[in-house]
Image (cartoon, rainbow over all chains, first blue to last red; front, side, top):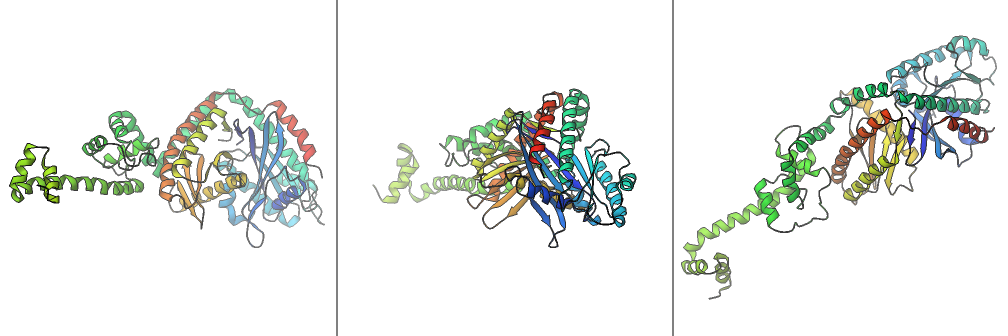
Length: 358
Length: 163
């Protein structure tokens, strides 16, 4: 689909060259690449096999300049023509705005042309496009070769829908620009009419929600783990605010219990506030960790709780030590205990005892 | 889907840019691109000047698309995170909503874990923005493509494409 970006002021359209193997799709792009001024085109990328057969796609971006303040950009793609590359061929068609069907004019290639055209229709249908609605141009290529079929017979077999057609010879460059110019024009005309037709939003609205709720459930299960717990957090703000107060402390200590967190908050400024300042949404993951659900499990937070473990363990050790000291003091030194009780407490007694101060 | 063109206004792009640059700072990554699944670049942040972002966007989208097919073959609907490890630079790709990909390029100054964490949180925020954009574009008629646009384009084409 046409992408319009008001921020970078760009209009971007995708044009795909389709057709049977060795019909000259890549040659079309190569010719455009060689003839168009270098400031108009980007780098051509070809994902090809060692024998120069297209494996995935060829890609050539062209920028025809600024129109009405918008940079008009076109991305030209080709598909691999061989029958057995249908999986990748279909992928390239995603979001297509216009198709150039490059047919081979040689008599023995007619079956391949027909097969490819049927394949195009099928693949488009899988993406929800109708071949009759899509801007399309047929290019009868290899007209320079001897013994090619006359245009009338090609039209009769391939162009039953009356698409505009051109005779071309991609190696010599005849007809290449005519084809490209027309498909660009058709794509822009289509975009213009669909922009005008968007005043009927009911169709678009009806179409979009049906697509939208699906992906979290069906397409992206790991995301679901994240998006699903976002609701409980919004519903019960109490834990997140509790975290927020303690979250000046490391955002990495989500597994700590409430009492530990408050103790930590009272204990003074956090150790590394700048580096581990909570990022928006990190309160969510903290809240998620309190829930012992499978959906809430994430490897990253598991790491975090491991990180947090030494801290809490250390704190517990201190508490245990204090207790132990308290218990052992009377046995070890009754006199110090008496002084500790009367004055600041046992710690002073402990240090005095340690350094031998009377 | 065919009529469902993608329209971004400045306000939303600014919001998206702010989120992405915050993520870059937090994760200490080099740069990030937001790419449409069709291969269009939506926005970019960080040190992208030395990169051919148009080609990168098309290739990354292609790579994501082919991985989706691989996922289907092994019985997964889609792999939502992809990671490419290199000698110096690495690429982390994660799905945002149902039609965009957040691409983070980073080197050894940070770790995959940090990038993953921040990318995950950012994609949640971005998904919300995209949902808003989708709602808006459904009832707005404003468009950059007018009658003028198509006819002016034709004139330009004649200038550029001369044999």
